[in-house]
Image (cartoon, rainbow, N blue to C red; front, side):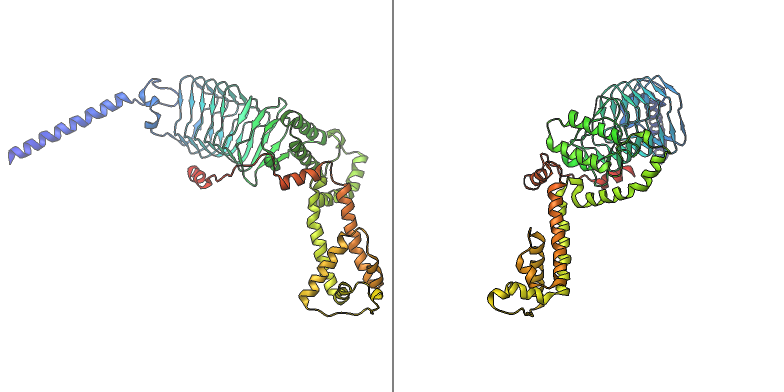
Length: 453
């Protein structure tokens, strides 16, 4: 019995010694490494997947110089992270990091690779005036709101499969071409600069509520069916918008007449309530006061023009108004003179047949069909038949002529107010289809939400 306890004690001692030796070996192999320095060649930095995530209750790195590898892989920032004016001389690795509050990288300089792939920004990410000298990775990153205004990118930019939830600002950013393959835009995406940067949205996914807000000159690679997402900044005057559209037509869509037509429509919509003047006009002058008084009739006419014909670019919208007018007059005829219309349809010229005018009583369904037929006939005729003028009395003729006048005005508006080429352009889209077709996007947003949470 004593030998048993003696052997057990020896075994326990050996086990403890082996455990202590293993811990010492592990510490020697993976020494403690801080994100702002430490042992630059340790295996802990090379094997980032073995890295124990850092949690920052407060991250203040304002104007800090990172002269070695900055390793923030899988780091979690519980409060605001301030890297304003920081300088990363070596690789800045923020892969799979998570920023729960605002992340300030304004005026930060990245001399080497900046890796933000799979990073989650749950609040505002500010990269305004940041300087990227090498390749930058934002692939699979998730942004709540991000600001890259005035940022400079001198290397390759990767935004593949990224996700923009609210606002993404790239106004006056400097780069060659920004590819957004498989990126998802849910909110507003601000673009444009005086150097005409190129944005490639060919494979970008736009939600139904997303807006591509243009603030300055820009080159676009985008399918015409995505033009509905393009709009202008609210502070742009008439001539600035015109310059942007003309630049797009000549630089980005020089040989695409259909795209140029759609760009003209975007411009017409954006200037619907805007005068053909620049900023100098908007002062507290007497003319401006008169404009405030006299603008309302013009705005009212433009609004009607937009909703009825799409400012001349969508003339076939009048079809819906035709149907509404015909339905309304069908109901009026069925209410006011149903028997008279039944009599007219059964015998429109009783004098020629020697019969007297008489009312005919039919079922409700037959009466509605006759009234609908009569309403369509009156609306689409260019010249009222003499039988109508002789069959109905004066009060009934006023009602009929009113619908005929509306139909005549619709014809005139369709032929005279349609923009040049709009009828053919819309018919081509209706029967042939657009030049490009959007691929079906079944992006799993639930996965994105789960990743962010």
